[in-house]
Image 1 (cartoon, rainbow, N blue to C red):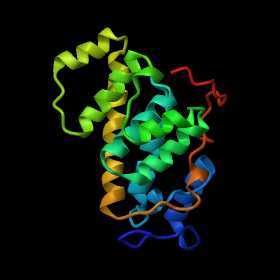
Image 2 (image 1 turned 45 degrees about the vertical axis):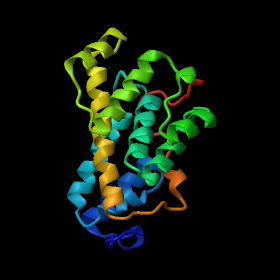
Image 3 (image 1 turned 180 degrees about the vertical axis):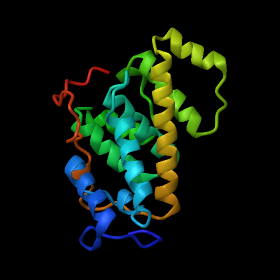
Image 4 (image 1 turned 90 degrees about the horizontal axis):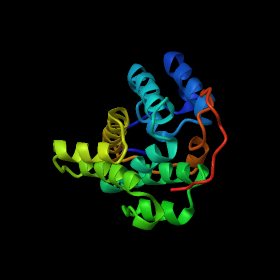
Length: 200
């Protein structure tokens, strides 16, 4: 359900049907946030590949870190849809429910993770709430062990979720009952699928 019409899977034809089929094969289903873009199939297709590259592609950031950014940014933007989707992804990745609940409320707990991860997550949230980033802040992340490539990826994931949250809240999408089907591993990825225990 949303403020604008979208094309459901059983009514999709041509290029849109092909895009839906690809999303379904890779993600286990087509989330409504993807269907929301169905009136512009080329953009939907490009968006899906951007999502996969940022969230599942090669990076110094593991997927848990990227999903944590997604949850925190979504909370900061008051996007319950994003919090629910990516909170479920964190649970499936083995992150303790207590920590998922804290992140879903915008809390970055000191006791559950080391300083490098905490500061990277704060950087992502700071970008969302409009805090100006100064060179000293980036240097601090470097001093904590983050490479420029990792800082770039965290910044891009933060920017991506800000875009996605605006799309979701701006067009009034509500959480679909089947959302958990689309929160698992990427079925098109060739890397390891085993999930190691969360260590913080």
